[in-house]
Length: 175
Ligand SMILES: [Zn+2]
Image (tube, rainbow, N blue to C red; front, side):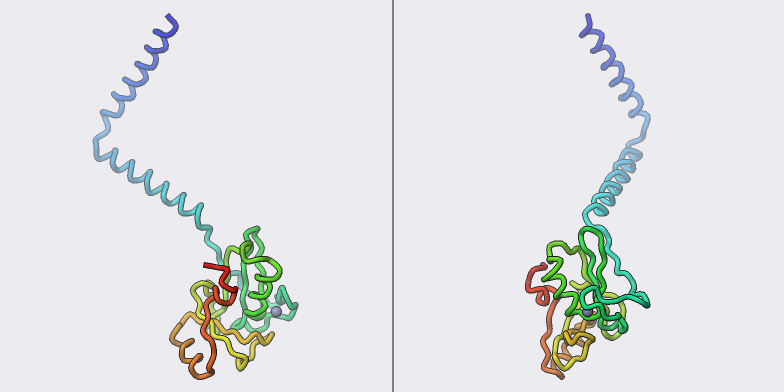
């Protein structure tokens, strides 16, 4: 008797559902499905790729590695660690050395470098780097970053400088 009772309840619920959904036109179903799919894609995307943003250099900021004031943004760099810290540096070489020697590349989630020409932040992976001891940077790392890869080629030619990527600077540890 018990089993029969349960079956009746289930049967009643499913037939009510069936009746309800039959009132919705098919177009409405498709619209609803679309909204759900787009929503799911947005949520998944947001979870997989937290948007990291660079922090602006403030007036009294000092290099996290060498403690010198960060006075010239065109040489500045910073990285965000996976546990949520942003570390700022006065020279790209300070950032690279600190990433490799102290923090560990696997513990870093994002790198930013200032474009030498415009002083705008660039994602480290999207910047082109040019390195020469003839470039006088705050800590004599001699590394400049640019968005414009054409400028880098010209500088490299004029100064017999090396053209590098972030991956090269980090010793091939980032893909
Ligand atoms: Zn420094």
